[in-house]
Image (cartoon, rainbow over all chains, first blue to last red; front, side, top):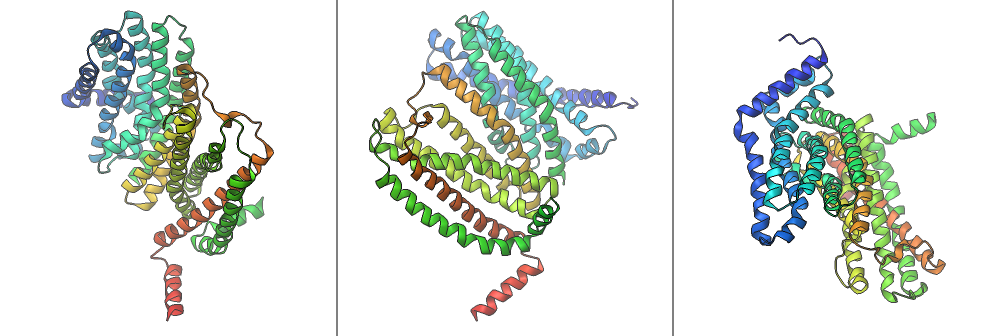
Length: 227
Length: 253
């Protein structure tokens, strides 16, 4: 493929990362298994009462999603950093910001999107009614890209360090708390039959903010780590 | 403008900064001591007991200044980090790095005093009050910054990575603050927070203002001492540090 425009370059990195991700099946599947295991831990520790689980369901799903996504982000830049292709990406004549965004988008497609599909399953595990599942899906649709974007900042900052996974989670989780607050309260309000457009607007605003600013921060962090 | 620029670039040199710090530190240090004594005297003897909370309100003289300082220090840290990123000045790296443990201590002090005050007032050591919660998250941000700094061996790279993290934090702090406030109002009714009322009695306010100035001076003195150590460590292979050490040896002999 001859790459002439920035969009071609964006597409080729996106396709490359998705193919690589799908070939390393464990990298792609393990966070999803982790997600289901974390969800299973709650009924086992709280007890199987339907009412309690239904109340806690949105919180459990979101906490599990945040943890699973932050685990899977550890590998986002690591392999490219180790084999030197990250430097090549930054040296390319195309906008580095665009190419970095392609990497983040590929992470979302491989981790966020399957997570959203799994939510339908986990909703029934936790007895969440269908209105709750619908709202939960929308919050995850708006929220999981933010997990990838904000996580990528920490992933870039901790790239190549010892214990990078733990450190990365430590840096990301406090920044994701607003997301958790709005998403969970949206589902809870939907279950009570209240209007949830306010929460959706907030989540949308957070998404737009992350989309515009996070690639900038990721790029400068990568340049710093590469020296 | 031009003069200010010259002044700034002059003290961006580590050696000049070191000499300036040596002159300034005792001033800030002693002012802090005097103001602390005055402020504490005012807090314990001058300010009247609160009509509702009695004597236990007096903890605000430590709680409020440390909560304010914890936010102020984050801003200083982020500003120093940004200056370091833009102009690559070594002094601002040292300042940003020195801010983090101080800010974390202020945040911890605010949480600890808030918790001590909460026990008699709210009947619990910890209440998920919006302000306490955002203070806790601020402490997490500080701890993340410290963890990142200590994980990166190269000083220059650590400083720049820390600066990016601090700036990301600055964008996030208002979002975190308002989301937590919103979350708290959704989950529980308004908590008994006397600090919200702007109508504080003047006799209570004066010691508070003195204490805040004392905290500021204390922070400035500690920041300068820490930054001085950082700069000496950072510049340990440079000529002027070598001369400085030789000069000290000569004095001791």
